[in-house]
Amino acid sequence: MSRKLIASLAIAGVGSLALTACAGGGGTKSTSAGTGPGGVTTLKLVVADYGTGPSNTSSKYWQSIITAFEAQNPKIKVNVTAINWNDFDNQVQTMIQNHQYPDITEGDYFANYAQEKLLYSADQVLSNPDNLLPVFKNQGSYDGVQYGMPWTTSSRTLFYNKKLFAEAGITTPPTTWAQVQTDATKIKATGNVGYGLPLGPEEAQAEALLWFLGNGGGYQNASGQYDINSTQNVQTLDFLKSFVASGVTEPNPASKNRTDLWQQFASGTIGMINGSPALIPIINSGGKLTSSDWASVQIPGKNGPLNTTLGVCDNVAAFNANGHQAAIKAFLDFAYQDKYQLQFDKEYDLLPATTSATQALSSDPIFGPFLKALPQSVQYPSTTSWANTKTQIQQTIGTALTGNPKSVLDQIQQTATKSQ
Image: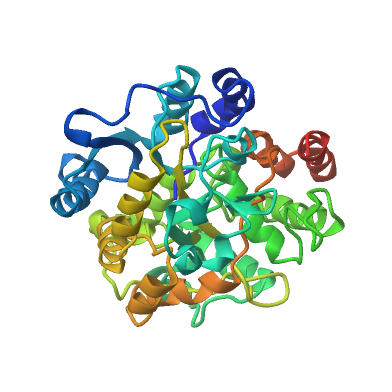
């Protein structure tokens, strides 16, 4: 579930671009993808690329679905374009600005598109929208209507290196922050990094939220209002400030990205780190740790393990500008079959986004524990100010480790609420 900085930086302009592209609202009609000769409708499918190279690019995955779909639906053709995650949001925004509307996207969904009336709602393009995991419904909704349709999901647990734990004389994984501190200190004494703390720009918003949850905090309160500078969150950053100062993390966590630290964990030199199923293939490809050398458990909180975790999803969005509602619905009904959901998850080590596919995968020894955490998971905010807020978190929250945590959180709170 990558969320790249470059995309976040660019999204601040989504609203204005969409307004330019769709003056008057309701969706400007494009003639670039209408019904062609022989009554054939051609759909433009734009997807983020989850692959690690030519052998498993997302275009290959989607083409296998398209081939099967077109065999059953000769009057509908689907052209797929896979875009690197780093460029996905920018390129989709450019398409909209130039009135070259996609029919379907799979990747990031932003409420801005729904706000500008560019999207079909989920119940307009899916026969059974209730099969989408309900825990992600609010995140994909705008003004009470669901537009973002989760396609793939992920959740987080604490990964720990059993070899380093044994070397440091630790017999059980931690469940509290105090135990994390103690264990990380023992692992540091072995010459390794006790805890990997990725508060660099790649995904600082995820790591920070996992720690906030451990102290009863978060980005929003129970009423859905931003509460980023809450007492609990300030206390959490105060703890992390002393945690980092003790030397048990890598140097300069504010500049360290998740991907780099996951690779370092895979190399066997980090004792603990928060991770998702996507960390597993990195461990396997690292060649340093066997499956018996690591394990994952519930993330420790201040006084005990979290009874929830961060749940992340990537969404399908269906654009209405080309007027292809019936063809889009036929394709999405086909693509959302369990077999294609499971095929995607096995290919990219992610989790399904439908209730039926989740049930089919629930007994899997690797994915089962992550799926168990999904129904109680917490998601990122879905307000139109979240894109700018996320960017500011990515750029500044790490500075709290050497500065004033309250001041940093006050500034982020101001960004979150001024355009809410």
